[in-house]
Length: 416
Image 1: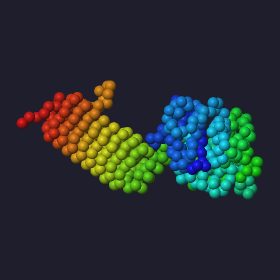
Image 2 (image 1 turned 135 degrees about the horizontal axis):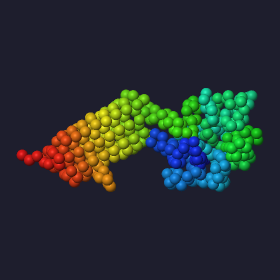
Image 3 (image 1 turned 180 degrees about the vertical axis):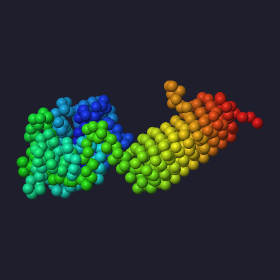
């Protein structure tokens, strides 16, 4: 959108997380939480995205895409001060500005799109997102007048006993007319208790000056959950995990038990693949159709499985590619391997890919048969239709020719 820019607030310390990792870089469902917000801004076609950084700004800056405008909040004086620090990027700009928090990973793209659409339709100075929650502790309460019009947002520490009973809370997503926002931003007074400038106070400033403010209520109160503690991370991960699983099931993937299945965000799975209980699938994994995965399987990052692949119980695979109709039904490990089609990998087989310095490659060609408890000390190449006998050790650098059988420790070719 040519008339929409975005500010993402990401300067906070996150002291209650008790962590050395910058707050917005904490991983949830395979993604740093700020990435969920960056995706929203991109999906809206925001002309420019400004990220406000403060605490550990260099670490966060390293993670951000090059097309992001980075603004440093030199002193952490609150959210209003953070927005004010980006004022120079909005001089002469007459469009709308969307303000989001980098620690609210449960926000949905469709919800924020509707927020912007509602704001433009009503043609008001500000529209912000609210939710109704019964467990409202810690959230800003929405103060309304007798006619139902919004008047203010009252933070927990400043709310009266009556106001603390209000169950409509501020989610922390706003759309403003940029010129008017920056006109009134300096009118926000410092909070006497926190010694900070709260962006939430802008609502009372605007309404007190006769400006029209609207709200949009989300039908999913979980969207309003911000991350402040390790417990919050766990709650957010559970929500995102179930969203991922639901999307996969809608695409034709069978997940036997969602309660015990863990699949990260950047995973693609073909239709009619079955994921059995206690399976963990990590980042950047692609699984074909009609596969059978688990139970108790771990598919680590950068794995690609073809169609009709079977990965059984207590199997771990990392940085490997496996061809169509290959089976590995029982406990074992594949790392840094390229495996062809119609390969059988027996129980207890291991690619010993790490020599203490380097990760080495194993190549297993089509229709090979890897016997139970075989150890392949990479780099190793197993030819087409070749066989490794049960319990053999194929030593480093070995090439097993097509159709040959090796047995023993070290493995040697059987000659006839």
